[in-house]
Amino acid sequence: MDALNESPDTNLRRWRRLALLCGAAVAFWSGGAFAHHGWSWAEEEQSTLEGTIESVSMAPPHPTLRVKAADGRVWQVDLGNPYQTERSGFRGDTAKPGDRVTVLGNRTKEPNKPHMKAVRITIDGKHYDMYPERIRE
Amino acid sequence: MTETFLLWLGGWPGALWLQESWRAYLFVNAAHILGIGLLLGAILPLDLRLIGFMRGVPLGTIAPILDRTATFGAALAIATGLWLFTVKPLEYAGNAAFLAKLVLLALAFVNVAFQHSGGDYRTALAGGPVSAKVRTVAALSALLWLAILIAGRWIGFI
Image (cartoon, rainbow over all chains, first blue to last red):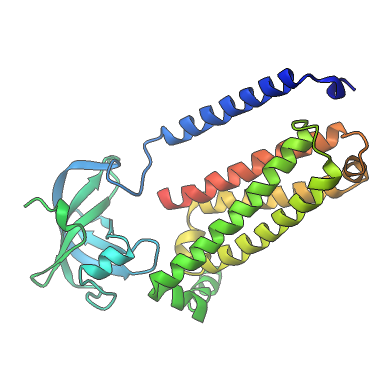
């Protein structure tokens, strides 16, 4: 019953409260350190990883390599997006499990997580540049 | 056995097509987002109206439209979602955010069934009082669909 007699003011205040709540929720969620896209989740410093390819996945949304490194761990190496990867010259049949690979890229800031984002991978002496503008040699 | 099934899923022609063509993937992905957009874009105003906002808008008029839009969006999102799942079935099956999304989806659909059970929802649509049950279930619905949205987005960040 009370609802029928609500003034427009009360309604407006309710909407404001709701909007505020939504804003706070968004701020909360986006404040986290997670980010798969972009580079903020990875170290500033570029580093090199050498190892043996265990598997190649070209499936969208993110082509990835699994690379067994000298540290004994299997690293997840994110390549560029499918178009950038294609443009680099790297294809699904460019490499096969067992091939040696050198990855230049940025490692995740998360400690002890074998995960990095490649700017360039080198197989058999040939470079595949995912992010040519980011390569710092 | 589950693994065999997942591997088989990843090998159907629709999955192979999306694995090989990121352009095709992009369109299916866009259709999935369209489904989500229609679903949430319809269910949130409907839930808010049921909760007690926008009381000047007659429920009997907007509810059937929003209901149908949300149903269509859900159907589109589920069909394209299943298809996208088959692109990397093993990976998604081991993704905690994806599994959380499935559980939340199941809860959301139980919630929908609960809302439509009994006569309260129909009474509200006919212009009668909106019961506490209808309001509570509507609030839960809004929370669940938003949680599903976030869980879905989280899949890519694990």
